[in-house]
Image (cartoon, rainbow over all chains, first blue to last red; front, side):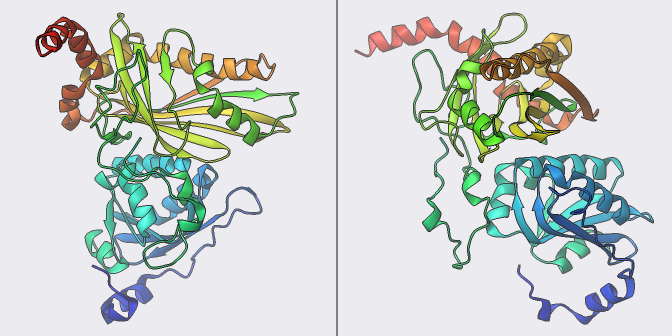
Length: 150
Length: 257
């Protein structure tokens, strides 16, 4: 089910406002690693759930950025890690490989990995690579946050 | 090949009329099962036709990431030229003992290639791979159910310290308990040697005779016991049964004439 932002109940926005951390670190590594064309901002949306806003290209060069974002998102006993792919512009097979290794880390920590914001194209890639067998895909942040244990 | 081939650039628009992402032409289209459009002489599509493609999450054994890399130092060749050569001559770079039947359309997204090989112990194996992804500087093959491992192999080339490097990276789990045993009893060593030899052959094509570096990480030491039933599709067992029952098929085909 698609839920537009205007349909989001006020409680979710309040939740976001309340828990969203001001230390939203811009994780651009363009200066350090020119090939990493991606930013990943981390938002804490509840005590138990963090959202990582992925913007740009997910390729092998995104590994450092992704793992740093995961480390930050996991702070404080978070149980649900949500990847927001609304800003995803490009992904190759190495990027898919990164998601697999991230999933293994998440499972090892007894957390859950969820995603939302996938376009039809990227949903199809999740299907063909069989990532959708193990990573729950949601239509909206609200759904993902709910499923993530908030 | 899979049922739907990639569409030309001008047609690549999504339902809503918005432009598809710039990686759209590089990915295979989703198909529930694999379809073999052409079976070359000497190959068999029995363990590929109608099988699902499987990734490292669907396998049984430990998950490994194996990286094999060689630098083409002193050679003026771009990553795109290396990958073009690799795609066009993929079969030639394979080590002796296994045979890769390249798809007629070449290494392109969605195409399916057949493989004849052997497992430790000399068991003949008919299997294949699907081209999951292919761009100018990399391509990825994905295995079908029943293949010795469940996962992806990504071949890529890139600039590294003023030289072009070539890499093969496997992300895999043994597909079932029998294969897991086989990998532990010499299969890993055979596989490592195979990819090292492939890269050495590719490097030799460019006149380079450097050592192939190998980097192996166990990503997940856990066995996925829920996947033990993958053994039903075991291509080694099915290939052996197919060979054993060949006289019966021959008699049946004569009888039906």
